Image (spheres, rainbow, N blue to C red):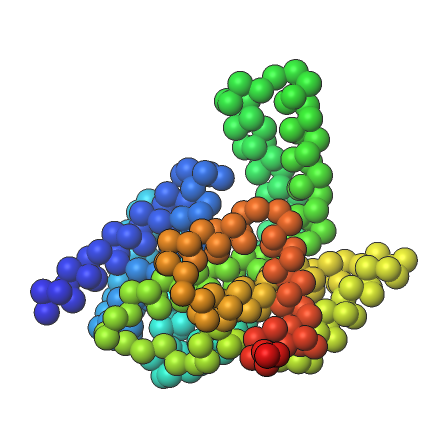
Length: 308
């Protein structure tokens, strides 16, 4: 009982720290958003959904005193709801990839409903709302560049680059948003897997053997072809589909690497360095994504016969 109470208090404090920190730290605290669902999800897996729902309720009450109403709605509908939904699916022994997919789908639909309600009540156009958001982020980025001592030509170059990034985000916002939700759920799942011990089980195929359904490759190919069609709406659709599918194929390429590393007696620190390099050193992410795409035909994880 004492352990449950302590973990509940820790989950509440950790969630408040992540969510409020992400709001007040701006771009520097954006990574805290990726950890926001984790404390409640872990609590729910350890002590049940009632404990998780209690923590979400207390966090909601705390946020009602500390943040604007729209931020409170965003937490309850997106982070609080997703943490409970993911925990519920995992407790029912739903395969981890299906649990993540369902959670991403529900969070995306809830986001669309909330956005549609806001646009209807405010009378704003979706493009204008997105422009406001991007301009605010661009202003924060410019201020950050100035704070680092950039001025003159260097500052102008950084502004130009930031403007190009903002234009890319505007054209790919829906796909990037879904990919962001996916990243949040996957990071939560990875940490839950590391913390599980003997307290709970996560069902599903081992990551080293995981792969996307074969039919997905045709969606990827069609999305790629739409980028060659001189039709703006088709290009916009293809760009957003690619923004979702390419990270998924990067994940499949990562599963291929995981399968390879499991067969090698490398020390854990070396394996950790390999994974780190895959994420941060260009062009390795592109190569890993390509491995994920061609895994359908090449089957990199199939045991190879050695010639003697």
